[in-house]
Length: 86
Length: 383
Picture 1 (cartoon, rainbow over the protein chains, first blue to last red):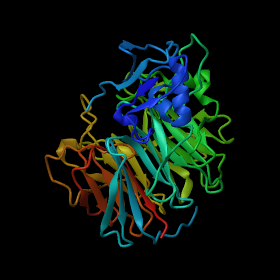
Picture 2: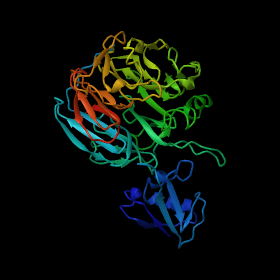
Picture 3: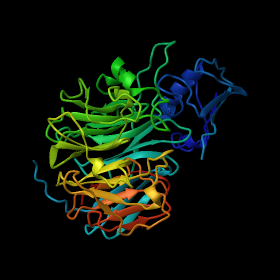
Picture 4: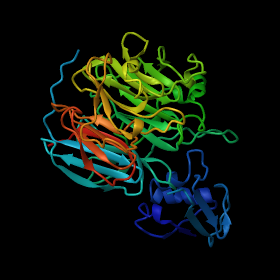
């Protein structure tokens, strides 16, 4: 599936705005991304495996609330940096 | 007592700001400064510290408004940076329990000279972490992060300073790597004599906000604690409730801020000690009246120096605006170098960097228009 990467995280993906990844759940996809781009996951997912306060993750057009969300190979995953002040 | 030689090499100022990190490289006379930065523009840099053991390695505690906390490491004085493989993080708790999440790494301290790859970190919410590989991987240190009594003193995310309670002022006794101190805002000052296996509070003599019980460790709010390099048995502390000195082996702090002018008071954030004279220390008082404006009293910024361990204080404001300067200097944003005469430096929340080559007797503004300054460290770099 395609994972869309926001600009604050592109230092990890060699400035790529979209990358391909595999996994049956959002958690598996993010683990695969972190394997390829070390450090990326911890910037958006806490040590308690929750999505950070100012990060939103959408699967297609639906907001994911946790990492257990099931994914299909043709899903589009969008990582969004939400409002965090000036 | 320890006799220390003055530094002779070039000084670098390491500046952490709300929008990135900067390095100001001085010549050996400390008259001209070469600017290197911004590093990580847009990142919130709470602390940027040079390793005195090799004078080349730097650690930077960062996060952004969106992204979680991490630590970046440079081994070439900031030419290149690598991210920690495992930044400070609390352990994952079992499903159904509420675990803690590091919001930001607030404080970095290099380990003992005899432990070349050791670093300590303090976080918000309050946690103590250690790295034994130069800052590449971090683990919770000591049992205090999960100790039920310490958890009570640490409080929750809602307790403490506006953007979260801080574990800070991590100090390693230069004579003994197993002798450690740290402080918590709030939660008191703590000491270990067994390499961090156990800690115990040292709060006797420290005052708390009127109406609260000083016997409750959680109510103690040290802002900054410093150990004197020339006499490691002496510590100074700027607290929410006054300025203190502690001479070990005593466990009782003495409120030396009572000797400050009444119209100025003894409230502030930073505390700086002289590198070679344990009787000399500096504070930067702020207005702690009514709603706690946290600015220079009366809009007239000044440092106060004691040269007799707190018996008396001398105002130092030559070069500063005489009025209408509403400065705040945060707890990590004032420091001294090790030259003779001692150089002093501080950064303001208004983005000004000030320096003195005369032990605070006169001051010049080294930089304006930086972002809000969170931390200033002075370090002797490798030639």
